[in-house]
Length: 160
Picture (tube, rainbow, N blue to C red):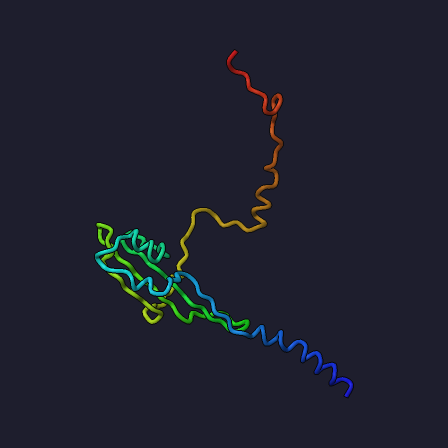
């Protein structure tokens, strides 16, 4: 009976901390527009400056076409020590014409995303890969003291 009281007391003291560590957490990342601001975008009437003033600068600009802007937002959720996962994702693509006017608005969500498999090839490099021991042994005997003639930093001859 004596041992159960301290164990129950320790359990009662530390259980709130254990339960707090298992709480779910939610993180919003990227573009977070003010409510109703994206709906105010009008095709063929607004320019780049109008868009930046309304919803802000883009998250990314297309690599090969500066007329395509992306606004990216993501919501991650996690539970306790588990790795967080992407619960929701939204991408807004704005396309501008050559005159700088908004031409098209497209919205993508998590269902439109695709998994991309990475290429496992390795690019060969020139030269020889040396081990640590080869690097250490390769420098043995190559150290020498610098040869100084005269005062270091003194001007060299020449001229007069």
